[in-house]
Amino acid sequence: MIDNILHKIRSYIIPDKVFNFFQPIYHWKLSLLAAIWYRFPSRKIKVIAVTGTKGKSSTVEIINAILEEAGYKTAVSNTIRFKVGDESWDNLYKMSMPGRFAVQKLIRKAVRAGCNYIIIEMTSQGALLYRHRFIELDALVFTNISPEHIEAHGSYENYLFSKLSIAQNMGRSKKKDRVIIANADDEESSKFLEAPVDRRMTFSVKDAEPYEVNKEGLNFTLAGKPVHSHLSGLFNLYNILAAVAAAHSQNVSDNEIARALDGFTGIPGRVQKIEVDSSDFPQESIGTTKKQDFTVIVDYAHTADSLEKLYQVFQSSRNICVLGGTGGGRDTWKRKEMGTIADKYCEEIILTDEDPYDEDPAKIVADVAAGISSQKPTIIMDRREAIREAVKRAKTGDAILITGKGTDPYIMGAKGLKTPWSDAKVAKEELVKALVK
Image (cartoon, rainbow, N blue to C red; front, top):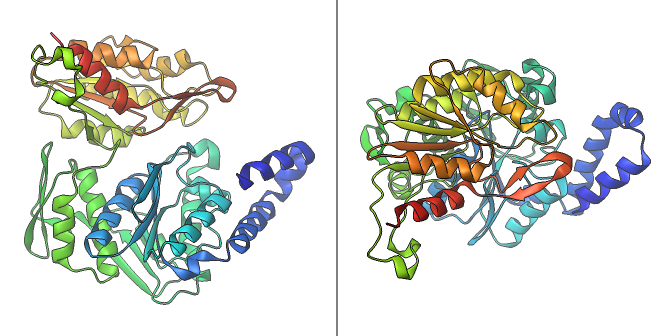
């Protein structure tokens, strides 16, 4: 709220050229003002931050589950939701890391509620606006990095520098025993490990060997003992290993970690399985419904790499893929590549609208279609109709993979238009309609 008011005042009073020149000091002062307003709440609670290109929200949620299993009271801030103790509410900001006043207010709320930890997703764009400043970290988890948000940062090097600034910011923290946890299998990990901290830890997929990855879940080893997770995909194994390392840094035992992983059933919008049961059908249709004999998945995958990793999980299925492109006006370079990956793994492709913003949605879809050569994709711009068509085409054993939005609460259109949306809700509604005989 305060962030929005200040943004409007700045927009009306300060010319763009003047503001752009003084932008860094403006954002720095705003972050300082927010911290002062809420009395530097991060000093009163243990703060674990998670940054990287992919897996941030999932890693935050897994860390939270482990800490809760270990008996701690927790708070959460990520793309999916905010949480303080037993209270949880959706993140409707359409941004992974909220404004400076919003995040400091959340930390203060967590302190007042008596939380032991707050786990915060920190992004490159948030760092670009200094939203990470004056948040004193106890631990930082680096998941991975690959090219993304290039238009916003100007280059991959600037994008990486923005991520690294989160790690460097730990040097300003007065917390004791500050620890950075980095993915040793990522070639940029050494740069994060140079951060001015007290301890450095790494994780690697080798830590889980031997492991088995399939669409039903993950089986791997933890401290030499077998562990099962309901999550699917090698990318989720990495997210789990990041969370395990974070838990180890806080002296959580392997037994507590194993119990948490076994009981953790999934994350909304991240390889989320959409299934219907008798309670989903209208009362008058009970007894006249068909069985759902195919899989429906909703996932946030919105980069070429994350799309391919999701599709690889379902290689044994006949895949019907529903996807758009990137959001309008950003990362246009990866659209054709996403089409090429869909062409490789999907037996049927349905291209649809996603978040066009002020760009022509048909142009975005055409850019994705340019990467498809072995088949002719179906283009249905209405996202609900696209999902309905995918459900209509599904046969026994098929997998419908709906990607790009995950838990995003809106479809973002031209001139700031926000259309309320939920891939999971719409997919379930269309499933119910299709399964009534």
